[in-house]
Length: 188
Image 1 (cartoon, rainbow, N blue to C red):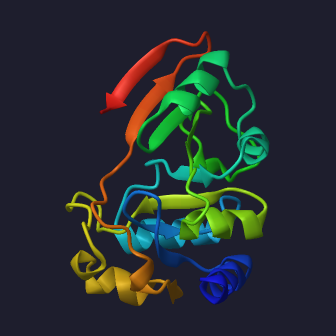
Image 2: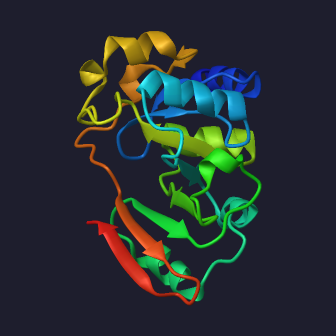
């Protein structure tokens, strides 16, 4: 895995986009500050530029790097989540504007599996990693590497070895947190 992490790291640092097994489903990723890479992902997925991205992090220090204010309730949610959880925080920071919602919010998911490819890559990067499902916009998300559209595979700069794929993958839960800590469940 170390070699794959190193190759993906180099591609991302050079401004490229990668196809990789996230902690949930296959994703397309890049540096959350690289505007050109984010635009390339939108073009590849044929998705609207105003659609937001998820930033994967692997530690509280990385979370703090990208989220301006973390309401206390979020720490409890992260501690007690029994499956991958994406939290939309009220205010993001240190990412390209395309990553933020129109209200300045940011969607972040904590990767807890230290053996996961995405965890290892975030560790090497030292900052968050963009994650968006590896499908054409409004098409079903791929349940396995074989389900990924050839157009997606040909449009990325690097494909992580499919043997790192998780079995029984599914999208994460999504919760939006208000500035006063109110919770709104968007996807169970």
